[in-house]
Image (cartoon, rainbow over all chains, first blue to last red; front, top):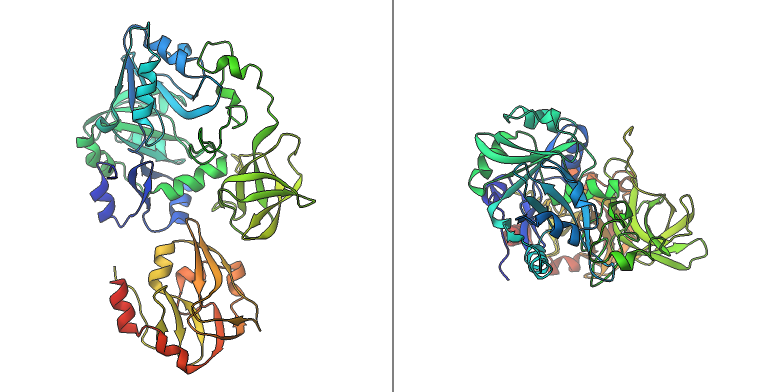
Length: 357
Length: 124
């Protein structure tokens, strides 16, 4: 299969990026050091090319009704210029994807599904549109997406844009000109830091990328940053095929509004208090927990599985996200099995990193 | 990018080196660059025996886990304990402070390894 490439592929190669396959796309994994890129975002600002994220535009008189039917959050609460974190479930309540849904200033909706899921998402949304006057278009190839993240990110982008970005609240979006290019800018991100995401025409991507002057960061740092915050990665922390989870099991029950009528709602009404929950483990022994590693209780019994893990660059400690029985409380002694050896740790509900650290 | 390949060592295709004069073992500049930020190194203990071509440990970076393959057979006479607290030494100084083991080995084992020129040709 030929990998899809972001419009900035050659600029990244010139900047010394190493590449990896992710969701069918060839994307930069680092530009030299994941640790340094991670630090740039936590302490100042870094920029990510996340053009591999999907872009699905929903428009027409019944666009809001279709969004309400297929997303778990209350899409009708979105005014133009708003955005919300949301989820999509199947009729059994199984989490298919987590996503941000934007209501663009013009009034239509922009859904940003995870990499590689754009075509299937469009197909599914069209199949569920019967009786509604709504159009669903796959615009993934029509947008480049640059995320600038870090405590200095908003002022950095603000200095290159004609709109007042500091006036945007978290999860708000606006049309703006950045480096002379028409863009949609939003105060969103996936790192736990303040930040801005900039959607632009692929033809303008190089100018926008260049103008947003801060260290380039790859998917490696994006992963360590989001693990410290306990943010989900589709396909790793949940997977409708390999590891089906409801939004409640996956720790994002807060995006499920059971007062709305969405596909999966009836199945989820009875499942708001699951037996297993998404939580975290911090190891006290030096080792690197990774996806698929077994979690054991103090008696050595297997009680769960690591879904994501890393050595936290900010904390210096090994941290893992995991599904564990709901009665295993934070502070409980557990271990993670790393190449046959049980490494001691303690259950800790993410985020591992708090605002004052 | 050009990588350092010191002339006083022999190399395995899997990127481990051994210094012929004293049996010090490590991984190459190319290998540390490919791995990225090293966060953990798992090594045998002093007195353990390693076997040429067999795995003797693991080096983990943030993005990957890689097995270490023994360039020679022999007894481990010293282990770089500094790596417990400072695994990043493998990135910073792969031929110096970031060494892994000292091994008492048989000179004949060197014949199976790459010369610096041959190793350089492999990575370029």
